[in-house]
Image (cartoon, rainbow, N blue to C red; front, side, top):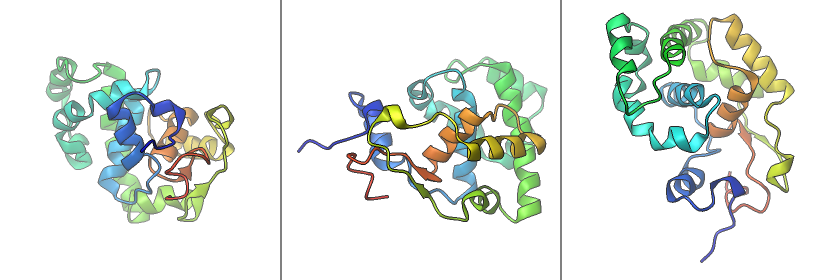
Length: 187
């Protein structure tokens, strides 16, 4: 039986599985939110499928996205990551991940959890859009602009509005499945 999907994932089994099982599902767990934020950071300027294909390598390289450990990475660890061919070896993005882990922990201290902070921007509920085609879906919104500015103010790096909107889509803060997609009404 053929499932109607969003156009961006069609034709690649890994992409389709990600679309069908994860993309747009609301995420409230801080560890998972940090994972997505890290992966979105590395995706900046690249395609999501590139990052998705390296996801398990990232998970191993970055201690299962344990932000407590990552916040304490020293230069030796950063140097080792730069030698890891299984990940995207961008020095600025690797350093940003360490900085972001530290800022992430500061937000947890202030708000009780990163989830409370980030979901507070949408009153804890996903925004359900009604896009009929992929062409209608924006790369940024006024809300992603606001969140991006706030994260930058709190010390985060590589969190431009496009990265943040992609993060919002991935973690279900917005439902951007097109209306004809089988996942649209399930979320």
